[in-house]
Image (cartoon, rainbow, N blue to C red; front, side, top):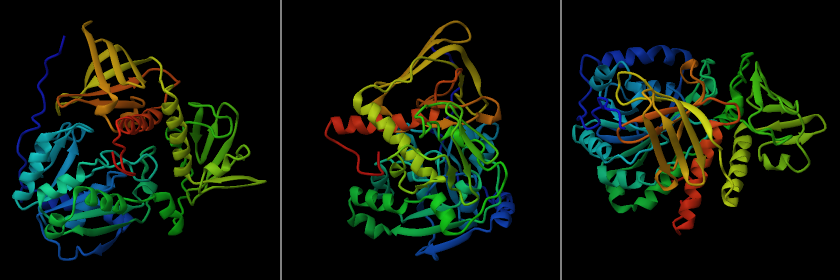
Amino acid sequence: MKKEFVRFDMAKEPVPTRWFLKPLTKLLSFPDMLVHKPEIRHHGTEDLKPPYLMLCNHNAFLDFKVATQVIYPNPANYVVAIDGFIGREWLLRQVGCVCKRKFTNDSVLIRQLKRVVEMGSIAVVYPEARYSLCGTTAVLPSALGKLCKMLKVPVATFICHGHHVNSPFWNTRDRGVHTSADFSLLYTPEELEKASADEINARLVDAFRYDDFAWQKSDGIAVDKPWRAEGLHHVLYQCPVCGKEYRMSSKGSVLRCDECGAEWEMAPDGTLRGSALPGGLAGGFAGGSSSGDGVAIHIPDWYEWQRANVRREVEAGTYDSGELPVHIDSLPNARGYIRLSNTAFMRHDMNGFHIYGTDVDGDPLSMEIPVPSLYSVHIEYNYLGKHGDCVDLNTLEDTWYTYPDCRDFSVTKMALATEELYFAYRRSIGRPCPPGLA
């Protein structure tokens, strides 16, 4: 039985930011500008005027605030995930925000972006569609090139550096880091007309290459907070010493494997230093080096090592999360979460996501998301500080926040597997994704 809820009106047309709210957007951003003192480098955007498409990388809420300061007082409409509208739908609509359910093929959004540029506004889009898990680029949708050509307005990128170092997705406490950003004009309308969608995509992938931990080291940024590693085990879920999954923990500045006791301290420069890796494995961490005193590891290299391990499972046809008991919250609209089920199960395997069970009224529920329909997935760590880790799965009408009630799982592994399953599917039909695209 399908529960009947009032659904968010995704088709409601965007409006220009109300004139009386423009100063508020700047005022709310200003304190962070004082703390983080972002250095903005313009590359052909000094005199850029709306309408244009502004494509931004995504590492923290600070992204929105810096972008707002840079483009003020020009009119802008931001694409925002539906959970951002909870309890403030009227306000967000009045400042021009456009709602999106993550990782869905949404033709309505395309029409709304077209309307935004027709109004003479800036269309601000975060194409990675989620915060970066370890401060490096997430996959970009291959439809971006077509979108750029369709809108027929200048295309600019706004790439922030240091936002992940300052408040990483796995521990969003602010560290007071001074940041920087590159605001670059990639295409004029005339250049877009001559370029193919594939050429535009290739240039966008190149523009979106970033690594916040490499930036931290190159700029000599030290983060000496005593709690700087807390939460990192959500991202780095597999021990490279013993190979065990789901037994990592973190406290203070130390990341630890509770299975074998291996430990690494997160140095102020963002490097992990500690237990030596088994022979030959250190070479798999391209940015790391080993010695008699242990190993120095670049965090994104550990993350990519995990991805390679997941890829091997996918290639062998053995990837399977197993049946996980879950509880589910639904978000059909911006009024807030609704407990949908306390007695459901989720499985993520070679065929995609499967959710089944009963809802709070005892009626059956299910959701099937096959591999070809999902190139990536949004996850949360310790969502809202009390609900635990979750995977949020979207249709055009609803979002299910799905919380496993067990120990032996990692939502990070599910995110990696979602991407690797999609890439494998594309290869199987003779349409592999170019690097950096999905």
